[in-house]
Amino acid sequence: MVDKLIKLTEPAHSLMYAPNSLSLGKMFSDTNVLYQVIRQYLKNEFNDKQVEFFHNAFQQRLSLLWGPPGTGKTTVLAGTILGWIEHFSVSGNSLRIGIGSSNYNAIDNVLDEVIQLINRRNELSSLKAFTCSIQVTRVRSSSSPPPRNNQIMDIPSDSKQAQELISAIKSDKADIIIIGGTWQQLGKLAEKDNPEKEPAAPWFDLLVIDEASQVQVAAAAAYFLLLKSDGHVILAGDHKQLGPIYGFQMKDSVQGLYDCVFSYMKETHGITPVQLYYNYRTNIEISDWPKKRFYSNAYEANFPEKRLNLFIDIDTKPADWPEQLPWSDEYLRILDPECPVVVISYSASTYTLSNPFEAQIVAALTLLYKKLVDKQQPGISQQEFWNEKIGIVTPHRAQMSSIRNLLVDNAGMIMDTLFVDTVDRFQGQERDMILCSYVVADRDFISSEESFILSSRRFNVTLTRARSKFIMLVSDTLLQHLPSDPDVARDAAHLQLFAEQYCCSVYDSIELPFFERGNLSKMRCKLRGRF
Image (cartoon, rainbow, N blue to C red; front, side, top):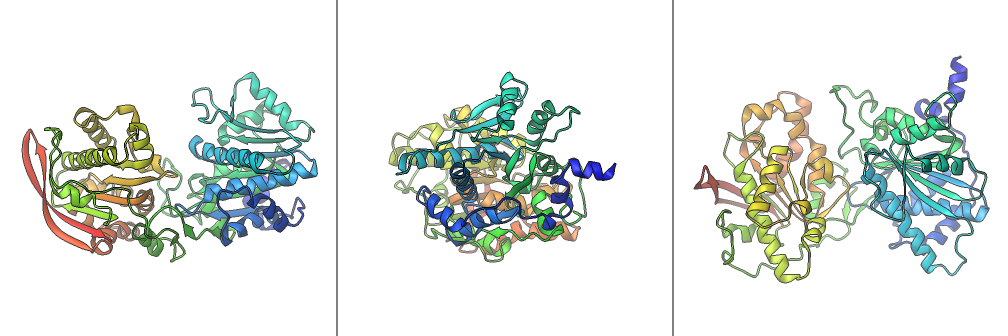
């Protein structure tokens, strides 16, 4: 019975318990030649590490891609998938590719990049167009939003189209089908085609799981049930960023079993990932801290001199500044593009879930930045401003609401355009400037959530969303908090030392005004920076 069950679940069983024992599987011609074909369609030629991974994805059954922030992980995945498409289109065989992740945004990011490369290939190629048809689909629940790209076929898992998709997957026709979906929705799709209603089906030649550092091991196992017997797997992620969400806390991760599938394969089975090295997102002032603290110096800023595209061409409060928001000339210094990293700390000790001081400073800096951008880069819509120029990160919903209300009521912002959210929603995204409000200042409250608020992974993601400018507001109470648990204390040091040691280029005492119970007050702050 056990042997029968193992046979039914291959290659998922071997992937989970003995991935190093998997046979080679599919045979590929010289991948150097294949890379030379696809490189002409890439927007930017792959660097050495990206090329190394490209070859691994064909030569190994299980490949791990370690993509620190801004290193082009999604671009490499799309280029690798294009390589598979090129190979199979020439061979005349059918190809089925599955794209998975813990959320639809990550899945859509990969599908979007693949479509862009296919379109680019069709536009630039001197060869004939693909002789086979290529279908890019995304399966979803009926309550989930459709893909944002209209070139992605939208298939609710309970629709008639879902049954048609199953038939297309199983067809012997020499075509290429790329299917994105969460493990739950792809599993439901497989159940429709399984007499015993099991979520298993031998569908995919290649399975790509992006943001694998957020995917639970059990969820990855569900994806593996959809592989052909000789299928290949790519796990792409960064275990130094946010991990999966569990409904319980595990002290011992059991070599990655209760962390994420990326860590599980790396630590339990010794699969060595290809670590991408060059960071194309941030300047050196932002990247140097994670380079030393998280990536063992293997994280190099490709554009070290990058600066915020902004001129501080005023020296006093704008004439149309709203009375309801406090003003300080210090805002001009805080926004200075020549100081890419700024930390504002202060001595208050009573704030918990919301913090009017931080909310007002964040709203005021955002409004000033918007006014300067509007003046110097006319024509930028509010949507574009929030999609590209700025993001506001804060850990608690009460603070999110406070900041949003200030921006709408006092700064004239449009609620639907605002991107004020938790760092969980920001992973995988980037902005020219990130404003971070850490909110909490009460000592007892900090103790109750220290492993959450002082998480090194959360801080790493928060910092590395910024391309050119990072501003953090944080209480001295949080910076000086010493957790009793040594593991939490080591984790907290990444944030605390960043503020108190790394940001040492500017060290000044300033006063920032804010409204408290209707009266204008002043908060004494320390201004630190890195430039």
